[in-house]
Length: 170
Image 1: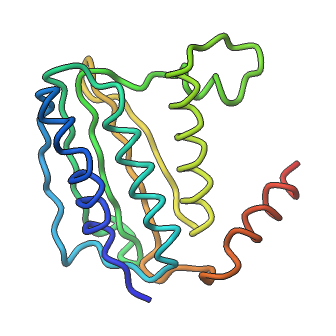
Image 2: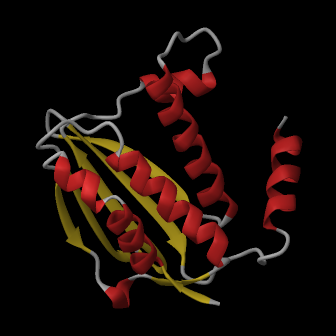
C-alpha cells in the first residue's frame, strides 16, 4: 500500500509540538505531499518516522532547531529522500560508540540516542534504504534517509525477516 511518509513525520512533530514550543525549538517544515509517497509496510514506515523525529528532537537545547524536507532521490528517481537537520546540539559520535563499542562509557541519554540510531538503521535497511549523517555548521547534524519508492517486504513478515537478518549477521 502507498504510504505518505511526510504525513507520518508531521504527525510525529505534532505529537511533540507542545514540548518543542515550550523549549522554544524552531521547527521548519519543508515537507510536501507529492514528494513523499512510497510503497511499503505502513507499520515499518510509521516506526521510521517516529524514530527519526525522536533522533532530531530529543535533547535539543532551548532555541535549537529542526528542519525537515523531502524530495526525489537526487540521481535516483526510484528513491525518496527525507532530510532532517538538527541544530543546537549535534549528535556527535558518542551515541554510535555507545552501541558498537562495549567499552564506551556513556550516560543514559547517550545510550538511548544510540539505540534510537540503531533502530532507525535497522528499520531503514529492512526496506532497502539507507541513512547518512553529516555535520552542518558548528552545531548541527544532518540526517538523510533514502528509501525506495517501490518498497520491499510484506506487512506480515518484516519482523521475522528482521530477526533472521540479525541472526545471520552474527
